[in-house]
Amino acid sequence: MAAKDARRRLEEAFSSTDADKKTRKAESASPLKEKLAKLQKMAQETKSPDDTTAPNSGGPSSSSDSGVLSGLHEISQKMDKRSLTSDLDDLKQSFADQAKVLISEAIDPMQIAMREVQEHVGNLESSRNNNPTSSSSKEVTSLRASLNKLDPALRRVAFLDWPDSVCADVRLKEIETFISSNCASCRPAHIDHFYKGPSGERVPSGVSYAEFRSPDDQYKFLKLTRQLTFNVAGKADLCF
Image (tube, rainbow, N blue to C red; front, side, top):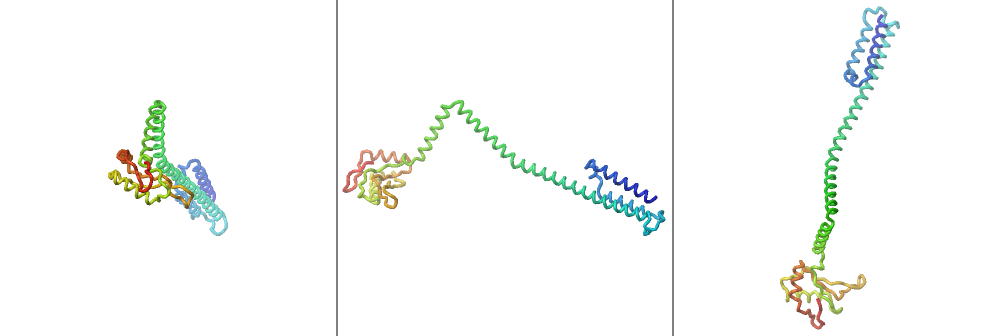
């Protein structure tokens, strides 16, 4: 009776375990410890005093005990494997959910900013297409104003026709003297020369220049010295 009862209970346990495979919720709702305790209780019941066969005789009781323990071990392994698989699946899903949140937090602001830039560019293109003449005129005016501020030629005055015999230092001194004598309020920011000749043998060309701090200073200097001549002692008059 004990062997038959143990076999019947093992079959019920296996059938219950197989039924738990159908849904993960049912499996997770029944803890592993509870199932193992149930099976251990079954194994103990098979060794009750009602069984008159000696434990070591190798009879039905010994065989049933061995079957119960074997079944218990097998079910324990299966449950451990299923529990581990379920935990890994839950962990993977948790990582996937966290990754989605992090990606969304990093990408969404960039996408919003890109959409705003695209809308702004689209509005500019639409405005230019609707009024090309006005847009083009404003752009050209703005570009010219920017170039005028950067172009050093609008702040320079050139001193021409220097003889080759006049060295760079003498030219520099003559230009400084002329400017301070005729327009002391217009102090140049820089005085230099254009050079000629191969590398390592370059010498001042016939052109030197004074660069003022602003186009207004350049215009003021030219206005004050328009009727003057720039004369270097012992040399011909120079044009500027």
